[in-house]
Image (cartoon, rainbow over all chains, first blue to last red; front, side, top):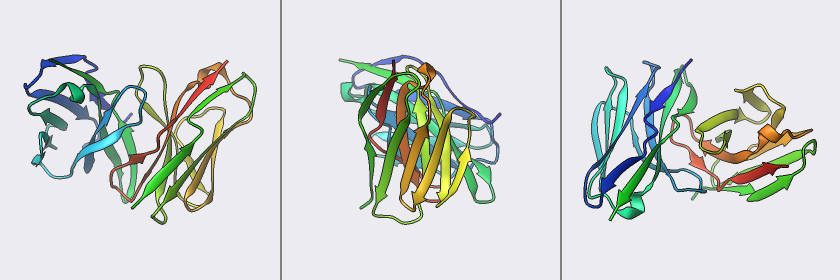
Length: 113
Length: 111
């Protein structure tokens, strides 16, 4: 069973702090990794993707990938109340050009003023 | 630019009734298309995906079916709905191994 695991939370951080969200995956051959933000009652929206080991920064967001340890993380700097949402980790699992997107259950983030 | 349309936004259907949800993508060709279901408080469950016209792969056995009659059209159907079919249905598209763009979703309540 190919799986993506996330702590369901909620993760509560004060405004202005760094929020750290983690995700582990079971398929060692996975190549593509994504973070989605989902507000309550809305559809997920892509906020970051990462393909290579290391860090990738986009504004207040940094995605970190460690393929050897099979984890990917998302850091949100200077957290704002508007960042309060569920964050979904997604991994493309498969090989040979056939990839199946697998999502974790998501981590609920609460940023309090 | 690419857009994805999904309708209806909400639907209340009695048990045993049929279902048809439609999704269309604009601004791209030969996209990979997906149907997901998200039950209350649960993660995204992949139901079907399609890499081309008439090519449908099912991930979860159930009373739902999917069809892709045109390159950018994906339809989710059921002949007889069950209470357990209630949930938030999401259509998504991607190109090859890229990220997924979701439609706005259909909230289905089976009563």
